[in-house]
Image (cartoon, rainbow, N blue to C red; front, top):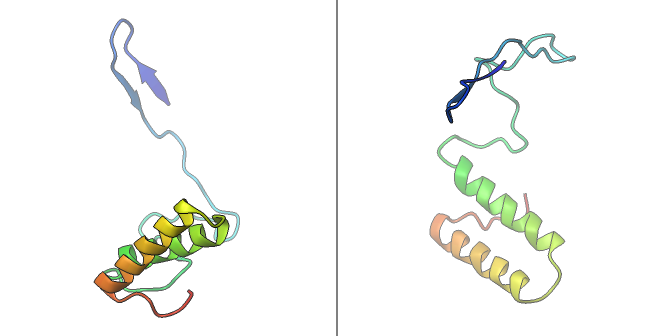
Length: 87
């Protein structure tokens, strides 16, 4: 439900329904979702960054942007040691 107070810049969105998945018949509140790549929570950000850079490299044609992504991936690998092959 979307509510706006007239003549102000104030508005609020109030949930008025609940999502249920077709598979489980419930939502993910309190249980989360299954990740695409299973890693510990302490490694999640660096692994996600590594994965995103690798996917961008696959999709990016050779050129300056591709070279920048390669440098970023190399820097990330040096900092957190994530250069262990493709995920």
